[in-house]
Length: 178
Image 1 (cartoon, helix red, strand yellow):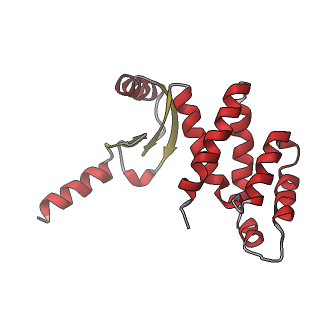
Image 2 (cartoon, one colour; image 1 turned 120 degrees about the vertical axis):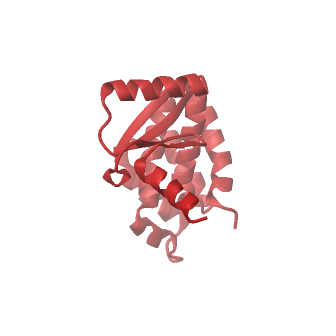
């Protein structure tokens, strides 16, 4: 069977075209986030693997769980996915949609994992550096991981900058062990 990304991409592109034409990118991102969360739930995995449950029942269950969070078009998407036995790709569909959305908004999402919470000045400096490098607006998220000892690891697109003390020690260990 094809992997989830291969399956999800055409659906994500189709949903993106609809959302963009209606000017509802944020609304669709929210709806897909809700659907991805439902599909990723372990209990839903058991339902999807149960041959006694029809595809129509799966669609009804997902839309019932989502409730008022879904528009009519999002409910139709769930129906189409269920009919094609594709509900399980919703998390990847949401990821692909969000990538298309960030590209359209000329924005890049970046994550900074640091040993301590960043100061406002550090955050601003990282954002500005990434903006210069990519020529795009930067949506920066932060996480704290005390195991880094000091410094930070920055991930933006395919770029990973490991400026952590833990990373430097690992490089030193590699050099010394040669």
